[in-house]
Length: 119
Image 1: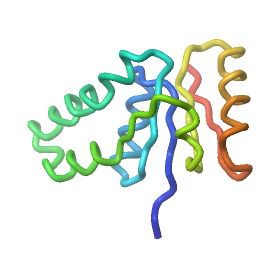
Image 2: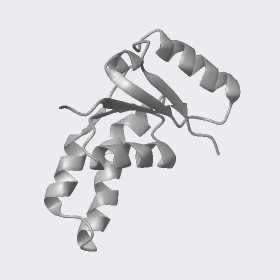
Image 3: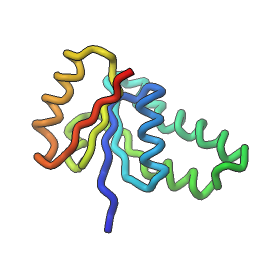
Image 4: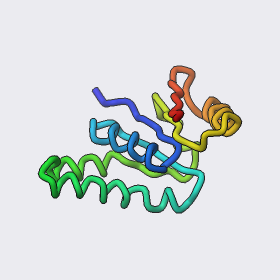
């Protein structure tokens, strides 16, 4: 049985870390950020983090490759439609989080779970 797709909105340190954990666990991950540079270098930043683990002997090159293969960086929230769970890791402004969830509710299935990451 295929694992459910996980979405992550926000590709700062915390969001990319959440995406990495799910991708390493074998989940397909769709991730995005409102800032194009964060989207553009997300896979490279994850690869750099994983390379350090490979160099330390804590991760095999095959596991690194599988983790990276599970990450899809999306340009639009519309790409999140297949997600069973979406975790947000965006700016700590309640109105921004509420607006994001309202937009996601129109895209996701009624069964999808919306989660927040708040510091």
